[in-house]
Image 1: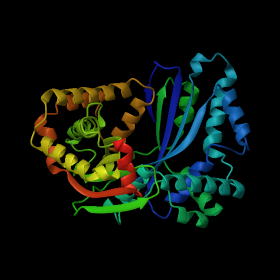
Image 2 (image 1 turned 180 degrees about the horizontal axis):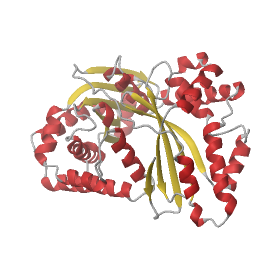
Image 3 (image 1 turned 45 degrees about the vertical axis):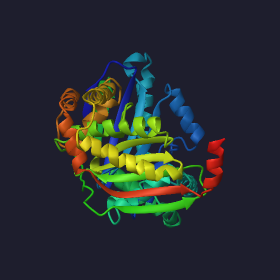
Length: 406
């Protein structure tokens, strides 16, 4: 167990994280299972009973989530509660431990609740299909990662829902119980709770990944009856998540599109008013960088030209050094903000653990501060567009132009 003592906050935070292979055949069933966990239990068989139990324990928060890290799927159980040393009532700690056991070991895995979870997931997936930004992102990743884990939809697949049985769900829960997770705690841990958590058989997990390979750019274009158009571009960075170049990639993304003064936003959105929104983001464990744009479809050719021009400016170091320093400072402040939160140090420790590294937040800040213009130019130079997807509003361009001319 990794224990981070933190007396700044009135709450404790516990995170128990399990790793499994990311598999197209089971990803939908994992989503269904996660929807069934936490809402009911054998001790509290209705949502109302569970809600009353957590409310009685001073509003405990607990639940499950699903995440992807490279070639692996992570199931996380998380729980937060008021520090025991601040509650002068003896039964309180017992209530916390009872709820912890209930959340993790007594789910109500019954047929009627399976059908409810499948219905909820179906509605979620149908809603995502109608979201232009999500659909464009999904199409771009599928195209970039065709035949690989990168192309998988972590939310699951509509066509798989009917084949999921209660036996499937029970088998996945059995795998969850047998797994050896990473246990992380942030706050002030009581002696009895520490003894309880130390009984957990943990494992020294390490992330596994394969980076996006070089490939000829693929383009997907799809029209739909939607309210706005969306463009997503996927770039291969060729930078592993544990690479010494990773801090430079963070600064590069901030300069490009993930900071408050990013070039994409300031030029394409503010200067030319070609889009409603534009940003960049890093998918660390896949060596990928995304640029997402929401705009009128008629502006996409101009937007793509400007993106290429901005990347060329970075590549050739035609960037104001003051702007670079501003971006670096913002990236460093983001690290400090995470450090000054209850779960930030916990997440930092987790990333260090699965990468088999031991860098402190202070060391990461120093690495960010050391990034030079030449470093970000190098990152831009090795960036490669591998896929793009445009989800276009079925067009009445003449009507749009008339409206804009009024």
